[in-house]
Image (cartoon, rainbow, N blue to C red):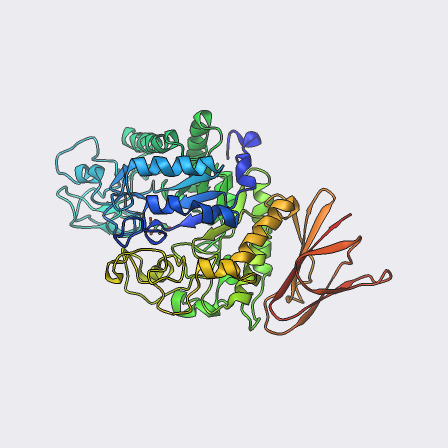
Length: 547
Ligand code: GLC
């Protein structure tokens, strides 16, 4: 538990932020090599700002052999040449700050590439300062009981006599942050205060400082719970919490306004560990999957869940709501959660959804007590091109990483390179969605994103800090109806993702109300103890009223 809990709170800007995540290789190519880059991205900031986003999260842009799309870092302090130079990076930061926008970098502290100089040293036979910076088994051919720990040890990849623990793919050796409860029979499990372990931590902090000194506003910490190890789950929890809380305290002293965002998928735990924000998405969060996808993505993610937002309407939201409420209760004002539209690891939310369905889902996601996060391209319903041959360790994730579609020209405004040189192929459909087209259409997904973000800015009750109360009864799952409140200001949201019309009932509106987005018919008389809300298929509405 934090020693400093009473004072922990996220930076104020994060509470009203809207985050736009970019997979840089596919966003905007500026030099005609078929791969997106920092200069291209900088030239597109107006688009992101016009939508209403003020915070960018960039997938890793560090030097890398790119066998896991850059999550295999080879040099933490160098920009990958395909993305540009440090000077390009500085220009991006300056351009963002000039627009009052912020930059969140992806930080990958749990592992490096096997081509990282630290690992090249670590795998040598001769002892050196990096020998214990990664987690190694005592010998290559371990006898019974010599190296017992769940996880993949990679055998035969080193000159030294030992196997390294991989953190994700086999070429991503796990850095050594120590064991909370090292087993005395397993001396390779180093304690948390071992000098090599402390050195790993210091090295990571100095990398963070390097980027913070260049103006970065925070980090999205890849696989945040993976750093500290333990044999006992309770010991693990406590040690992880102490670790991140200390990192936070140390950095906050010098950089008081930065945001630490976790890839933890358990906001309750992540915020208790000192993070400012965490996502409700994938691994721990089956319920979030139920919101985003289910039947419609079975071919891609092989899930049996049904999404509430499927037009066939066999989903349920109660597990999601109760998980979200539990997280919110646990984090209080100390942190925030976000339910993103997608990310570079997940199928696009557009799979098997048309524009009307996407708009219903977006209305839901952007009116939750959460920080809105949108994955690039989701503002136009960019399609998932799965199955594609795997690119840079993407496998089934590859289809959600294809080039941004800016306009209706041949290269979609993404690149002037010949198609064969593109990082990934363009959606071949002549009707593929583009930013240019959707800017011209008043009812497009893009305009909807813009309107929703504007609505949130106008009505803080709709934001991350407004109270949330579900109004439809769980036995009547469609439409979903909920209230958001801050002080005397209330907003109500009703959404019907089904193909057919539905009528919902809820507490009556207690005062004059006005519809501020979408449309629906509300029926209530002075004497009624319930209001009825009539929604056509795939319709939503948002009302405001004051107590
Ligand atoms: C995270 C990233 C994912 C990456 C993995 C290993 O889950 O989101 O893309 O492959 O970590 O770093």
